[in-house]
Length: 301
Image (cartoon, rainbow, N blue to C red; front, side, top):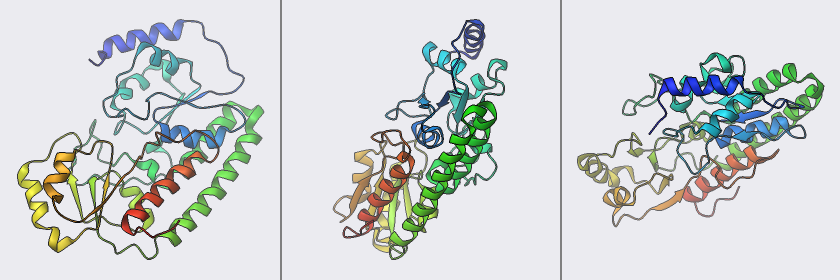
C-alpha cells in the first residue's frame, strides 16, 4: 500500500533533521533510468548518478520505501520527469526539506511536450505525454539545464561539466543525423503500437503509427475495440507491431491472430543499458535499430 501523505511528510521531516555526510560534489539522484543515463553523460568523471526506480518496475505506481526517502534527502539534486509520470514523488518533492534541490524535466526550458491522445488518461491532472526522454532534443535541453545547475552548485567541477555537455551535444547532433538517414526510406511503412508510449521517438524518426492496441496502459481495452481493430487490418495493413513490457499476449492475439506481422519488444526504460557517457545515445540508437528492423528486416543502422 502507498505510504499515506502525512506519514511521508513526517518521515521526510525526521530524515532531514538527521546528520548526513557531505559530498565532494553534488550527488544527482534520478527518478528513472533514462534520466540517470542523461545525467551520467553530464557528470562523467565527477560522480555517478543514482536512480530510485529499478528499470523493471513501472514508474506509474512505484511506492517509496524509507531507504528511498533517505536517498532523496541525501541527494544534492533530484532529477524527475514530473507529476505526469512519477505521481509517487509529487507530494514528497513539494516538501520544504526538498526545496531548491529538484529539477523537473517537464518544466525545463527547451523541452517540447506532446499531448496525450484523447483516449489516454492523465495523472495528477497533467495532459502531456510523459515519455519525453525519447526525444534527443529534449534530452539535450535537459542536459543543458542540469549542467547549469551543477556548475553553480559545484563550481570546482564546472569546467568538467561544461566539457561533458559539449561532448553530449556533439553526440546528439551526430545521432540525430544518423537517425534521419536511417529512416529516410521507412517513413511510409505502416505499423502499429501496443501502447502509445513512443510518439516522441516516432516524431524524431518521421514515423506515424496507424493504430494503438491499448490506448491507456492502465485499462484493458474491451473486446469491441479489439475486434474493430482487427476488422481494419486489411485496410491499414501494418507490417510491424511495436510492443512494450506491459504487452498482453491475449490482447495481441485477439487482433492479429493469423495475420502476418513482425513484432519487436522495445525497452524504453533501458533495463539492460549500463550508465556511462554514451549510455543515453546507446539507448536511443538501440531502440531505433529495433524499430528499423521491424519495419524492414534488412534495414541497417
